[in-house]
Length: 124
Image (cartoon, rainbow, N blue to C red; front, side):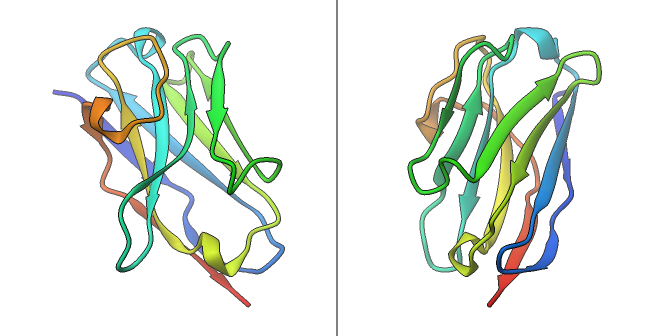
């Protein structure tokens, strides 16, 4: 059984930073592409960032480019999302997702496993 457990969310002031973590079990992590998505209240879930199985390829949404960075540590079965210069519009539930593939993509429908989500709230 594949499990994804996120941590690191919370309340932060605008301009602050947070680092989200997602630890994966039940699957060969080094053969798994990973992604971060977010869903604000009343909005659809959207892609934030993705990373290939080796970390050699990453994608980041234009809305967070230059502020958010995705990375992974295959020895720890963990993917990270470093979020800097946070804005109130970054407030959302952030979800970690895994593919049954090594290749990173941005489309939500190609991710097979999901975490429970972690709330990020940015106050102005």
